Image (cartoon, rainbow, N blue to C red; front, top):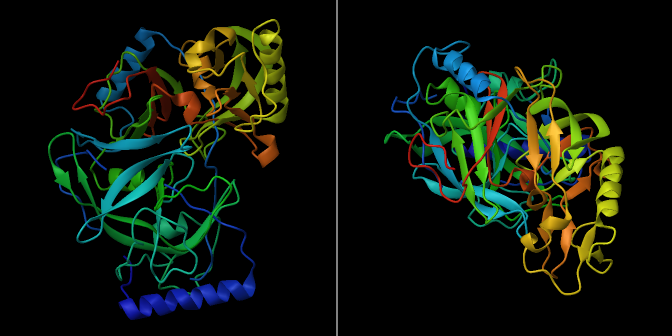
Length: 468
């Protein structure tokens, strides 16, 4: 249980902590990111140092693959519906569904509206499966905050203490609590951005697909010192959807509101929806592959082999992570250069030439006149795929059509939406938003599986239906 401080003491404690940090270390430049809501289960929610927590989060990259038989999928779901491997015997009858807004280009991000506080106020958050911690820019007071669509969140005196298990989950190994009455955190992102703050509790408000309204007390970061990174977005904060204890998904599951399942459906026309729980989709269209047992920090199906035009091209053992916080997909330098070479070779003799004057992305092509749609040029590009060896019977394959790795720039050029991850220090390959467009992607933490299927992501579902 957290120890409550008065509002005055809360502010003074934060200021004291910040002073110590400035004396003891220079902070890197930092950043932040990251909902409206439809929701989860009819049950009632349960109400609920001084070492800086550092979480390395990657907000913007991705790739993946899969394909398996209907028979496999049906068998998997029979086990699941029978409760095998389920952490709770209680049936979860509904889900939480949040509308998404934004696009891959030109906005460069998606966001959801989350309502929290008493009385509830709206905040726009970046849904990020690549990180655990949810945080908001916070008036505690704020030392460095960036432009945001809403006034800064004002915290209550409901603070997470340093020895709380949620705080411990953000630290690596043994940690000291020089300031035991609070839990400090610092998140750093791959683009150089970061957020520094204190963990607090407050009430979130959700509507559920089953018709109930719930208001769970959840922990999140009160960020009072933000420095924007290269891919900074003008939002109120980040909605952490990872697998850790501090994740909103894990907290909702632990309160008995949803199954430990999260997923998203991003529309190529902009918008889409995010969901917590498992009654939003039907099983039969979904291709499933197990989550990696070797790489457990993020949502990963393990190592994949890249295909080009349906053929293997010798690019194997690509560790792939699904990251909704990344607008574009990323490959390591070797795979990226090999793919770029294949694409350029395929374009020989086609009516496209490299657009050296278009700097929207590193590589763009133009035609005799500006293109009006990706569909004007998709015939010149071949589909990609990521084949994973870990399927239950066959190799699941995540297909990436040309419209899921190309963007149309404002200058009428077509640009490659797969980037060189080695150049920004990534140690793995990423399937980002662009490659997950018009697909429902599901992360089932109870069965430790990742699934995907083609879907109409233009409107959130009303009840247990998969949009085709």
